[in-house]
Image (tube, rainbow, N blue to C red):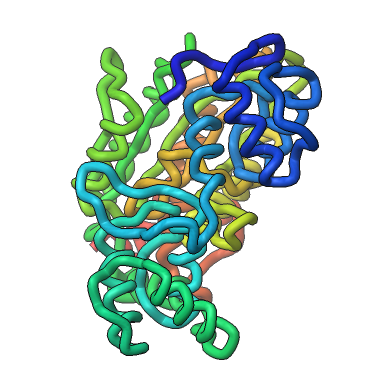
Length: 367
């Protein structure tokens, strides 16, 4: 655990530990006890590669990611430890290799949970290694030997597609969790969008959960736990961004993904893209595209999770738009249509910006 954020000018053993990891990752030349400009640049490079917010400051999130990055597959024995789950790049590599060979270890999130233990046991049975669910030297060697000859395509994508097909296109049997941000001075605007969206979805037969009320703000872990307890089909987090330069503006979508581990949420990416397109086709908000991130809300939720930043509170134009109730209503309609399009088959889908809420009712998609 990090006692306080680290930034340029700091000194000490913790800085030395951070720079040691950065050297091991090839982002820094020398270990140092001083947090200088070179260390700051290395931290920024690390944050960019990990899908974190690029600040050059080592906060709790970056420090934890650095701790996870220290581990390579084979460095330690991996196993399921309830109450203190093992995390690290070695776990992510293990999960990725198991999935490639057709063993369902769940999402590649770098956290050794029950699904990963189950997949390890199944793999061990298949290769004649002691089936104890622990990934030690014998299991690693078996993985190394087989990974060169056995690949399983994209089973995660196939499972996601099959799950959506079973659930069907109707919204009436869906469960959606809405997570309105309340960490800005304009949280009332975001909460208003969430409440309007909740009303429209309920009218279409969706079961909706809000992670909190307007006067409360649970911790991120509490909101994640709530989302996971609902059996949600989709988690949608709504936020406003800010930037030192007021010229920054527009709407941005984020989904879980890591280029480092070659993994991303297929459903999350599709919905983020649909939401971006629908909002930008109906409004004059700038399309700032969609981006893969490893933020906990995206990484640790069991259901596909997407964060949509609806504009910049530092941009007068964005704030003027969002202050208009009619504009917020248009954003809500965009999000509802994007949610419906997520569950439509390709042949039944419609062009961006063409579906209306009345179309969904007339098509019987609420039943």
